[in-house]
Amino acid sequence: MIRSQLIPTGWQSRLPNNSSPFYSTMAFLVPKGNPKDIYTWHDLVRDDVNLMFPNPKTFGNGRYTYLAAWSAASQNDGNDQAENRAFMTRLLKNLVELDNRSK
Image (cartoon, rainbow, N blue to C red; front, side):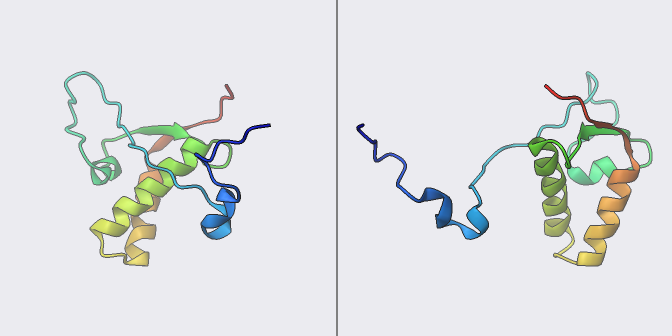
């Protein structure tokens, strides 16, 4: 068997906890015309906003969504853990549906 050297042997162990690098962009889907002017993660914690995203316990994209929200809060709030938790609490209170559908 000929093995390509594009991916080196042992690639899983090059990062801590056998993690994988991942780069992606989160997208906010809003009604046509964006009537509530939603542009940033912090717009999603307003009282007039309802959210739906994949369940972080069962979907990888749900985990990425949760982690992206946490990261946005962390960057905005200077990595203040109490502020991050408060942001995530407000975000999750706006969650009207946690998508649990399987493919």
